Length: 163
Image 1 (cartoon, rainbow, N blue to C red):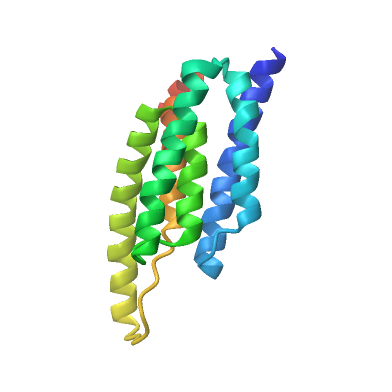
Image 2 (spheres, rainbow, N blue to C red):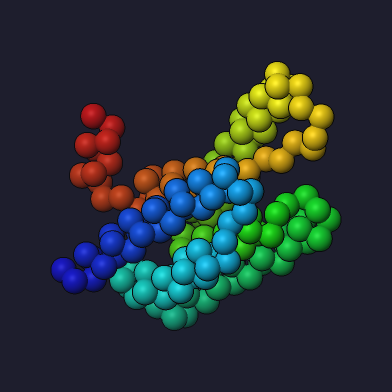
């Protein structure tokens, strides 16, 4: 019972952190390191509450997170992605199973496309000449929340949400 309570408490804390990351990215175009650090520090507790074995489960989580960080750091080096976005996606990889992380990337990309179109239209309508800055943390948070709702909520809660 205690691990179940802890498990869902950690998921709620992650959801709150994702919403906070989205709002700070909208407001300041920045996702704070302390927030990414807190999300990363919560992952081992989540692994324990989920009953993950060190091998291969936790090793797989760490491997996917490392691969994501290396790939995304390359995009950051090419100035195609912000540093906070790289860190947020990397620490999210510590929380979600690899197949759910792939789902997160697809949902994030779709939400990011919609966000880019909306922000671009808003930018044009306001006749702004400065460079368009997309708060991509919003799309990352949306993808993360989607994956949490689709893969980690209990079936009873999902049925209540669907009704």
